Image (cartoon, rainbow, N blue to C red; front, side):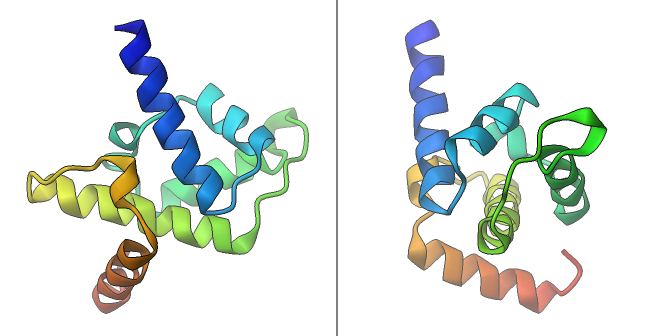
Length: 114
């Protein structure tokens, strides 16, 4: 089980690194129990805003730089996870590629409420 959990965390962190998060941001997210795509189920834009406030130095934590585009893609990742969960489709982090960012970003914009 520990090996599987480590693999899940590594895959998730690799996805976050690919969309623009630095190692210190990953560590802070992991410390806040954001450590897999499954941990994003039910997370929406407002939740991401709160998480980013914590990462960027809220509540006495050290300041961590999170690029705007990394945050934007993370919101799309949360949308991707929630959409695919509703359809009982895989939420494996490697599926969140550039094509998925465009596709789910467009879907999210069409809903305009996310």
